[in-house]
Amino acid sequence: MTTTTGAAHQAPPGAVPRPDEPASDVAHVEHVMGTAVSLHLRVRSGTRAARSGTSKEPSGLAGHVLELACAELHRADALFSTWKAESPMSRIRRGSLPLATAPGEIRQVLDLCADVRELTCGWFDPWAMPGGVDPTGLVKGWAVERALGSIRAHGVVAACVNAGGDLAVFGRPASGERWRMGIRHPWRADALACIVFVDSALATSGTYERGPHLFDPRARRPSARAASASVVGPSLAIADALATALCVGGDDVLDRLAEIPGYEGYLVRTDGTEAWTEAMPFAS
Image (cartoon, rainbow, N blue to C red; front, side, top):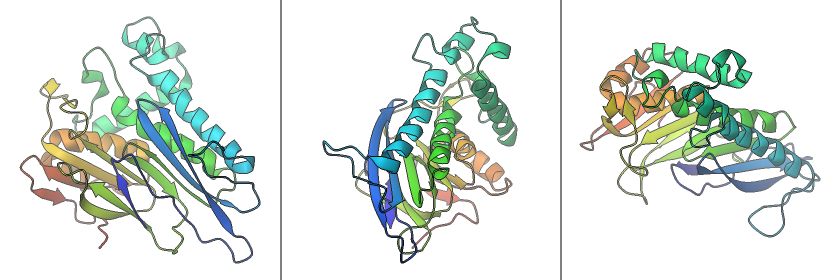
């Protein structure tokens, strides 16, 4: 099975249930964090799973699990939105909420940001953003990871949560093989730049959908050395931030990424040429 990152549509995942335990696919799209988040679950038959996309919503276990996952996404949006004036993150940015009294999730995310800032030698730096600290480049992956965690904790056979090209998975496709994910070509919306195997997480960053929105923390201005940058690894939060840094810093960050255990990267430069780390898990 091949799905496409950076696109609005994604094929539902599968898994290999036991012969006496057939499974049903459930799909749902939640609009949150300024994007459409697609959630695909494979649940054991008998849980009254029903596909969304019609007037009938998933019920039983599937509906309960989707409700929990979407609640995680909306909580992340409520905490970290820089567009909502009364979110804790907005209040921190304007100095009306001390970090010491902020919700614990914010301190957790900022600790992760500090780790990635060090890993990337400053190419990812939320403290260098205009208007105050802004962990947007990591927090979407963090939120998706939490949503997938709530799904995994409730007996679902397999699942994929995809937020605009940042996705996390568990379980196996119906064929029993590894997940195969297509990375969209940065200039051709109907074509793939490549296909990769994903065991846990894949994040993609680029300027082809939102324009020049990425900020170079070293030059202190909007800039990107890559048209598209993708990172696979065990944590989507970390991969999300690394992909942001890779798109901004290009080959300099790719060289650094090659030294980070568990993570691999691929980029399409602005001139159309490509580069990747040695163990990037390309699929044929």
